[in-house]
Amino acid sequence: MRFFSLAFALCFLCATASFAAPFIPADEATVLERLPTRSDPSLAELGRLQKELAGNPRDIKRAVSVAQRAIAAARAFGDPRFLGQAQAALGAWWSLADPPPVVLVLRATIKQSLHDFDAALVDLDRVIAADGGNLQALLTRASVLTVLGRYDEAKRDCARLAKRAEPLVTTACIAAASSVSGDADGAYRSLDGALATPGKNPQIRAWASTLAAEIGARRGDVAGAERHFAQALASDPRDGYLKGAYADFLLEQNRPAAVIALLKDDTRNDALLLRLALAESRLPELQTAFRAHRDELAARFAAARRRGDVLHLREEARFALEIERNGADALVLARDNWSRQREPADLRLLAATAAAANDTQAQKTVADWIAKTGYQDAWLAVLGTRPRL
Image 1 (cartoon, one colour):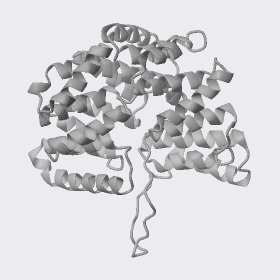
Image 2 (image 1 turned 180 degrees about the horizontal axis):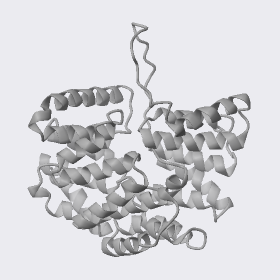
Image 3 (image 1 turned 30 degrees about the vertical axis):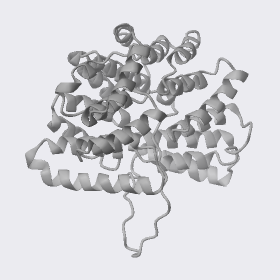
């Protein structure tokens, strides 16, 4: 998973970004992209705020509001261009060495979305050094540190939230790091218990429920995972990360028809399109749709390589392994991806590609990481019997 930081659940919603070189069509009638409908209330509000900001681009309060909403839209719609809008909203302060703390946190959020984790940490460290109680900075830094596999540091940041955030926030923050560093059972119990108490913020509930579902799935608790995924979807049915995590769970349970129903309208998002294609590949009656989506994914990944985009290495490696059945290429991509981020999905991918390519060195990397961290995952325990991720 990509650690679902509460800082994003509150309002700084994380999204993966990719920026292509400009394309000039030969025919002015060419349809370049169909944007999310402007009838969506959240997008209508974003557009209204952007127009207001254009009249006074140094209005920091409005600029922050635009940036937050644009990042939220990027996550909800899987459209990285909204991240460009977020950065543009902060243009008056973006390149400053010492912008206001709220801009530093937002800048770090966008940088981590671009997988520029080191630069994100520089900004977050600066904020926390000046204000050790900055809730959003602590949560975002815990997120980045967890992505990098620096679990003890992440848990220290989470512990600092105890007197500043509601109990579910602190519990989930700690559980995210603990669940991948030797205490999946304890993390799940504490999070499941915290979720039993009603809460008012649906995004916080969705974040915590998604995390509980993922931990439950790694523990082999299918019923518990299903229950928490249902709770998360009830709280935030549009969230792209949540949909991807649930689709992976459904694919593991060999329920491709449920994946089709979940993702049939999400073909703009590369990660969700991949999962849709994986589901289609298992259904004989959908082979025409599968081939079309397979070709579309291949074109998207090829375009990303041409522009030097490394933000979708995980998806491209999985595409190479599970759709193209090219274990050697998949392993190269998975290794590159592992060198950049170390979440459970990245470890699973490295393990699966190492097994497919029968690469003992990569298998040793996986074994060493598990020994070092105490990582627990029922999926890995039966990897040899699984034909798919």
